[in-house]
Amino acid sequence: ASPDALTRFLQSSKAHGILQHYIYPRPATDGSVRTTATVCHYTPSSFVVERLTSRHTMTDKHVPLCHSLNLDTLAPNGVDVAQGCERKPIKSALVAEKFHAACADVVRRARENGVVIKQMSLVCRVDRDDRLFVLYCEAATACAASHPDVLH
Image (cartoon, rainbow, N blue to C red):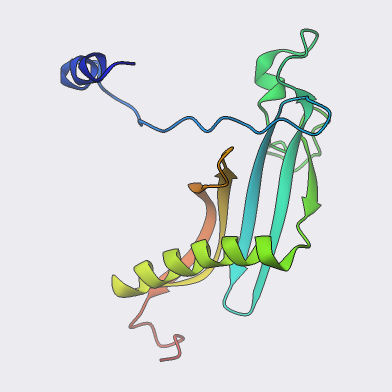
């Protein structure tokens, strides 16, 4: 959209929702394009990074687009969903460090505002230029920095 079109949208009465930069997926080595994301599971004593990859390509005409974009592996009742994605741990220390730095930044900013993060799962994407985007926090447990359980 052009800057003028964006301005008109923001000034309209229908300007509700979230504006988000679209992150184009990187093609795989075989040329296929699948939805991917990275989930960082953080606690002060542990850190795990996993790559989520859609089981379906975005161009598969036999699969509805909503299924090829789906990265949910569990239905609300916790049953595994076959249409979901594959989860694989990221083993590269260099890559994991990049995501750990993003989590540490969120934790630091929360602490500056009087909140201590006990655990969280951040969902991130990396674009074609290797820039890291934190999309949202999937789950978090936090408490006030003044809570008696918090070590200072």
